[in-house]
Length: 375
Image (tube, rainbow, N blue to C red; front, side, top):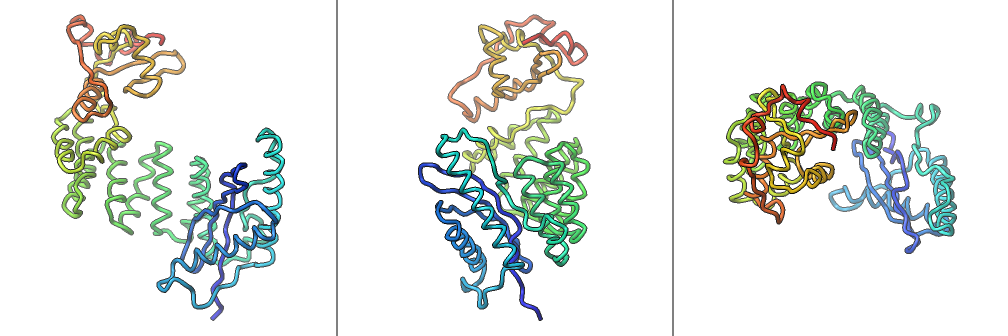
């Protein structure tokens, strides 16, 4: 049986420090059924030394996954000569660029490629077995996700999926990419495969969140009940059920209060970062312009409110073409309630319904156009 090889898949420059004369590279490799993404800080110097240090780090990474902390037999680096040659060229170019940028205080133009895909050419790629081709494509997909190239990531991840249709990582990130692009229906089959392969709180919560985005609330609620029944920590399930209740205009605060009893710090962080104020039933929303919403919240000027809106501190909706901003009363009420109940900021907000006319209190979605003003 042929000895397994260590495959270096890619490397790219993450950052550098002029003052410390160091750089950090992100890299990925595979060995057998193992796939790893790592980073390493290297001191700038002779490229032969940088190359040696980097290769040694690769084997340390590999040793770290063994039960006794070290491989019995150190595997060879696949396509060793060509791989080292590409690495050496990469370090030479980066070192040259580093020196030029350092002299010009970071103002010189980039002159070198900052990344290497070791199997980009058909010749190199053709030498690989299917197991390694799988890792090549999943690695490219994750590299593109790191660069927010979500559509391109899907292309590579689907290539990986051809080799391993039920792989947990592939289905997880295909779902993530489709969700990121707002393609929640397309994400569902990948999420279901992800849950089937690895049923845990994260996979179940991700599937439930997709159902919420599709307004399939009953399906999402069943999943959160399952999480609550199967797993010890109930916080994620309660938070999900609170979102479902809120979006449907039902009582949601009891779920959040239950979390607050044992996990208040976690709850505050989630409310700041993950709470979605958008309601599902658009027909029964009260839509306001900045002038009405400002009076309701006691602001002296609409500008004080729109500034918060532009800073994404308060739920609002922008129409870029018209340059207008819209607020929803029911979402503002939730925003005030959450901030005051759970002390999300140091401010305590009040509402002033007495400052509105009877007509303003009842502005619904059918009057949306008249509720928008130029901000």
